[in-house]
Image (tube, rainbow, N blue to C red; front, top):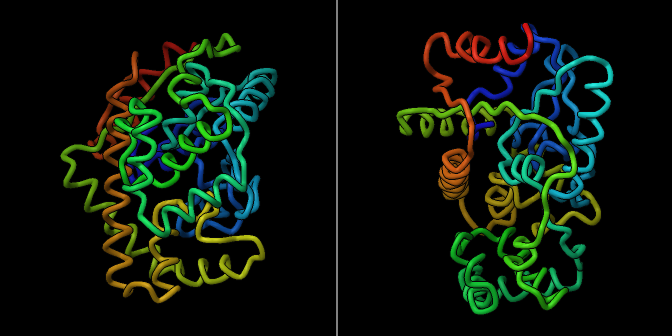
Length: 302
């Protein structure tokens, strides 16, 4: 696990050469078909050599939840282990990792009408205003959610409106994981942070040069896909959607996407720091993959 642009895919491919591993993607954006460039999805050659499960399993106008991920990941883990191989979970969606390893509350299902109402309010008054509404009904959740994190604000407020019970109260209920798996956790911590920011900026430029805008134009033609769809709230997509709607310049869209990606990385670092029993390493240091292999070998019986 690690922040965006921290060489996770590269290291996963290397580990699959050294150990009998099968990769399971832990990424809330890679589940969507047609979202390839903007998500830095592994290319066709990489996926042919090292197949990744839980990639390209949803259309972009559909939703995919942490609960669905846990269900799907456990099924793949069981199948991989049954074949005598090792499941290698790779990604940066920390909520998915936490839900899988520590359990997840059985939250109410999404309600499209309520989501549209929340979105309409946000469109009129801004997400910080909606965040204040969340603060009134669930101050604990509001304290940990950024006032501009539209997806998490929407879900927390939706849960309250659907059930009359705060998201925090749902999450406080017993939700221990139902599997008995042992997880070896490896965290990729890029230091100094400036180097990660430079990698993020370079990757964004490469995405635009490789046709990201054309990819997004095609996606916008899909019936049922809107700016408020969960897939389009992925970092980069929502900022460049505004550019294609002529609500900002290309330069402004790039700056917004860059800022949002850095904020995402910051949240990912915060999650990593809170993880227990995790082996962390700087993936930019020489010999990092060898150090990871040396850490894993005795624990995997090699």
